[in-house]
Image (cartoon, rainbow, N blue to C red):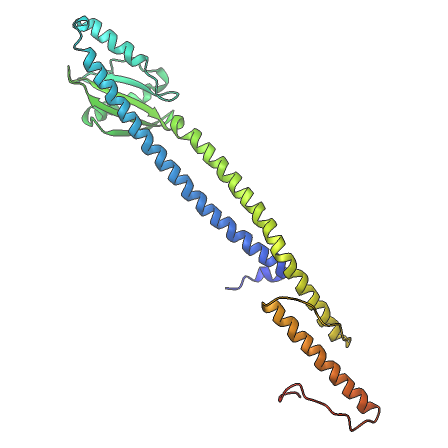
Length: 270
């Protein structure tokens, strides 16, 4: 496929544009892979850690429930609520307790009350031991719940994506930007050192061909390469020798030396 707009540029610039675009696209694709890989690993780790913390809290509360000191219902409830209040999960996450009839027993911060609507509480009670996601004023929230062995209460922990994922996401974006910028600078410098000799050789070939177009025989081109540039230089040197012989022949004929031998360059030499 030919991109006509590139025809306006010289070969070095054209090649540089193509390479930089390819490198940029490749690095963007790699960045997307890194981003989603980090996101998946962070989400999986958060879910596993929060689930473990929930069941550790459940075991602790059920163990304390057997202590004689807390046989009094009022003392037991007070102890449970104080325990839940002391728990923090990331910056804003917290533990909560819901009774079997849907009444929230623990104190919930006012700014998170919208997450505990009647429908939300009903969903939490119907789906114990499952992760439930809800969206509210404080971004996406993850609810983890389980049933306590006594009084059919539902114990839960809620964590927020903006606490456990957004800071990591900013760091990932920062690293991606640094990686892409650094990669482009590196490849641009590397491309310059790769293309500069090639560009110099092409300029030398172009200048010699222009001289030949003006009837001037340039010196032999000295390019020690085994690639296509080297082959072009050999061909131009052979062309210079052939044209010089033709010019010498024409000069001899012009001087009246009709016996001067002329050796054709090939069987097809016109």
